Length: 221
Image (cartoon, rainbow, N blue to C red):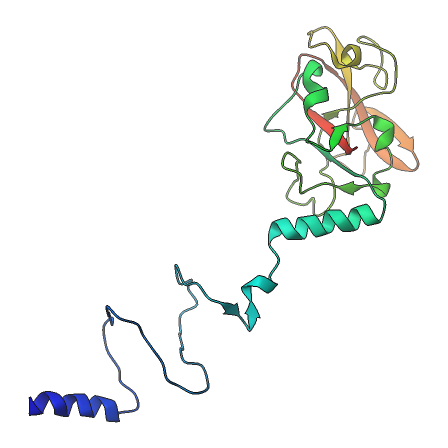
C-alpha cells in the first residue's frame, strides 16, 4: 500500500507524465488548467466524432450552411432584377415531346430570346437538376446542347430557329427541333452550326431529331 501511494504521489508531483502507449478510460478526461490551451496535438488528421462547440472562437450557429448561402445568393440575384437560367443535367435526357416538363419548379423551358443575352441573367447553379462543369464557376457550362423554344409556329422539318418538334409534342424520328449551346471553342463559335449574334452574344444553334434525348434550357418564371 505504501508503495502504491508513493507511486501515485510521485505522479501527482511530476509536472509532465509521458506514456508510450494509448490511454483509455471509462470516465472523462478533464483539465483544471485556468488559462491557455488545455489540449495540444501534433497530428493534423481529422478526429472522427469530435463535436466542437466553437472553431477558432466562432460558434457553430454563426456559420452559414450551403443551403443558407444558396438562399442568400438567390435573394441577392432577385434584388438585382436578374432572372436565373440553367441547362438540365445530362444524367436525365428528354425527347422532344417531354422537353416542356424538364425544368424545376419556378422555371420553364426557355424561349431562346429569353436567354439570348446571358450577361443579363444569372446561372442557377443551385437548382437540383442544373448542370455545371469543372470550370463553370458561377456561370453556365459550355458545349451543353439543350432544347429551346423558338417563338415560331408548329414546325418539324424546317431550319433551326423554327424547328420545335411540333411545339414540343413529337418524339418522331423524322421530326426535328432546335437546340442551342454556348460554344466549346472560343476561336470558332460556328462549330459547323449556325452562328447567332443577338445583343453581342454568341450561341451555336443546330437541329436535332425529336426522338433523341437532349438536355433542356430553362429560365426562371
